[in-house]
Structures are given as structure tokens and as C-alpha cells.
Length: 110
Image 1 (cartoon, one colour):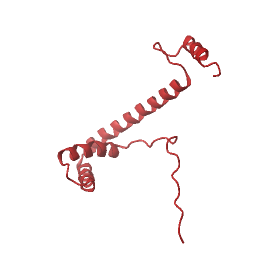
Image 2 (cartoon, one colour):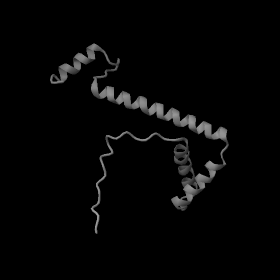
Image 3 (cartoon, one colour):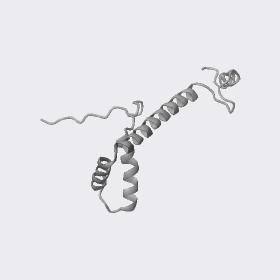
């Protein structure tokens, strides 16, 4: 029996997964290795990066974990700022009652 292909759900509205220490290490290391070895197949690069990760000390891995946490927090703040900017009129001086009034004057239906 043939299966019908399922369509992918809309991923635009779904929040992105947080980067782990390992995924951040892979993203940075992959680019560096690819730049130095442009002919190397991606599968081999990933294997090399995985070996490098396995050889890192616990202290080095902890530094990557901290970087991942910082990136996650920074991303969360950016998402909140985008939501606020979409909801409120943000002027050069920030969100103020005057700017909110300006927004209402520009878009009376909101």
C-alpha cells in the first residue's frame, strides 16, 4: 500500500529549539574546518568535530555550556523585544504614552 506524504507543519510560528553546548561547538567548529578543508565531505567534518568534542576537558565543555545559556537568554530577550515592538510604537526615546498616542493617531483602528 502506498503512503501519502505528510505535509510539514508550519514551523514559522513554532519556537526554535535552544542551542546546546554541543550544537554551538559544532556550528563554530564546522565552519572553521570547512574553510581550511573545502573539499572534505560534510560527513567527515562532523566526525572530526565529534572527536574534538569528545577530547575536550570538562572545564572546556562547561565554558561551552555557559555560552549556550548566554545565547539562549539573549535570544529570549530579542524575542520579547520583537513582540513589544510589534505591539507598541517604539520611538527613539522608547515606549512612552506620547508614542502610544502617536501610534493610535497613525492607526486609529488599533
